[in-house]
Length: 81
Image (cartoon, rainbow, N blue to C red; front, side):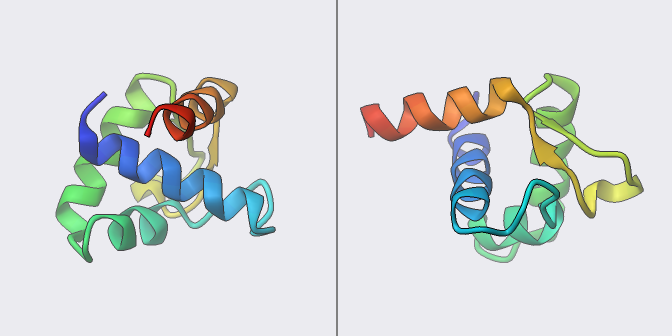
């Protein structure tokens, strides 16, 4: 997983922990985690979705959630950071 992908996964995990609920505004969180770069956010989300780290049921990754695999990656990365 790339450093950008880890930043996005960690930001999503924090959003879940802070009470955003199970369905997250993926694209907004990803763009904010990547310095406002929406194009990079879209590419990272596409890769994360394809690899099973996040799941979305909307076009353009507007909303979705971390998969159990994504939550585990965020938790493990928090411990090693």
